[in-house]
Structures are given as C-alpha cells and as structure tokens.
Amino acid sequence: MVSAALMLRRPLLVTGQPGTGKSSLAHAIAHELSLGRVLHWPVNSRTTLQDGLYHYDAIGRLRDAGLRRDQDGEQGLVPKEPDIGSYVRLGPLGTALLPVTRPRVLLIDELDKGDIDLPNDLLTIFEDGEFEIPELARLTGEQDRARVVTADPGGRADVDRGRVRCSEFPVVVITSNGERDFPPAFLRRCVRLDLPEPDEERLRAIVRAHLGDSDGSGADGIEGIDELVRAFLSRRASGELATDQLLNAVFLRRGGVGLDADGLLDAVLHRLGGTV
Ligand SMILES: Nc1ncnc2c1ncn2[C@@H]1O[C@H](COP(=O)(O)OP(=O)(O)OP(=O)(O)O)[C@@H](O)[C@H]1O
Ligand SMILES: [Mg+2]
Image (cartoon, rainbow, N blue to C red):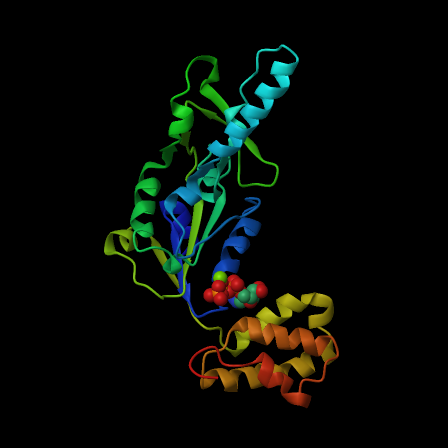
C-alpha cells in the first residue's frame, strides 16, 4: 500500500486501533527510503489549513521596525526595514511543498480530530501542489525573492514571488483513529491502509525488534517475554489494548521490575475503551 501511494503520488490514509503503529509508519518510510526528517503536523480541533502552510508575524516585524527606527534615528541613519522573510514561518505542510530533489515525508497526525472542513481544504492543496503567500507576492522589484523560515530546526528557504510550488509531491501519511468519517471526495484521492492488530507471531517480532538483537535473542529475555505476550493476548481478546502497552511491560521486565506484584501488570495492560 505504501508503494502504491508512492507510485500514484497520493496521500496514504492509515487507520487502525490506537498503538498499532500508524504514526510510526511515517518514520519507518522516511527511514527505509532515506528521506530525512519527518515533517510532523499534529491536528486538533483548532487546526486550520493556514497553520500547516505558513504563519506571518506581522506584529513582530512592526515592533522590530519601530526599534530600528529609534536606534538608527538617534545615529542620524535612514532606518532599514526588517527583512520580511524572517517573519514568515512555513508550517509542516508548507515546508513539504518546497521544491526539493527528494520528496519529504509529511505526517498529518490524527486528521479525524480536526475541523470538519480541513480534509476538503487539504484537497485543493494536494491537487495543485502549490500555494501563495500574499504578504510576499505583493512585494516588487529586488525584493521578489524572500528567505523564509521553514519547519525544520534552523531551516531557511528561498521563496520567489510569494509562490511555493513542489517539484516532487511529498510522501503524505495521514493517520486517523476513526473518530470521524471523511468526505467521499477526500477518500477517493487517498490510498487507504487499515493496520490490523498484530497476531502473536507479529507481536513477538515487534518485541524482538524493539529489544534489539543483543537482548532479544538471549534465552532469558525471550522466556519472560513469552509469558507477557500471552498475558497481553488474553487481555486484548476481551478489550482494547495497544501494542505500545505490551512494549512498556516488556521494558519494565527487562529493567528487572517484577510485574506480578502490586498489580503492576494490570496498571500497564489496562483496557483503553469503556469503563475502567
Ligand atoms: N507494528 C509495529 N511495529 C513496531 N513497533 C510498533 C508497531 N506498532 C506499534 N509499535 C510501537 O508502539 C508505539 C506506538 O506506536 P504509534 O504511536 O505509531 O501508534 P499509533 O497507531 O499512531 O497510535 P495512536 O492511535 O495512539 O496515535 C511506538 O513506540 C511503536 O514503536
Ligand atoms: Mg499516532
């Protein structure tokens, strides 16, 4: 499914129970394909498309212009306007749409928590692969290239005439816990992947991978862990439980914590749904 999404240049919509590795999938793709740091855009009910694209700090620029006027005026100099690019910060989506030789991985995390209009707003952007920053577009003359701030730590990028246009469509991973249905027009444009809950064999493989070879292959490590996997599976059969919780239990056991005492296993492997 990941390959299909890459080939079709469509967003991958990942659904599944909590802790089945939806968000981790974006990081796994970036790692496997050497696509660098994942651009993470966590969505909540107040998130708008604008947050993902860019933010212009007009007040900060005004304040800095005032300070300069005061300082330069004292020295009898003509004050220089603060460079506008430093006050435009691209969001994760805006940064993912910068022209680059290798596509970036963009994780739009928990889109179902977002505003009802957000999926449709995203459609237009995905279709066009570009957007405009009006504050930069109206600049003229030698100012028509601005060096803006990106969503990467310490990152800067040039934007010409206020237009950001991707050269490679980014690898977009959208996750959803299924709290809200998406509009059909949105679903049609996504490649869908439902992550199933891992079975016993897969759980063991996941645990082994997390422990690393040195610990995972040791007979001691495996022995205690078999028991935990079984306990996890029997509890999961009667209620929602995340893979993550099993990993917590495994790490505690590896750290020498006795899980049988004091109800610690109950505390770590508690059900996620319904009443406690
Ligand atoms: N299939 C898997 N392979 C390896 N690790 C996994 C897998 N599933 C879950 N994990 C581990 O469990 C933890 C939680 O995974 P992740 O945050 O990706 O889940 P999620 O599906 O995004 O959960 P949520 O819906 O709560 O956001 C991570 O530390 C991850 O490494
Ligand atoms: Mg997640």
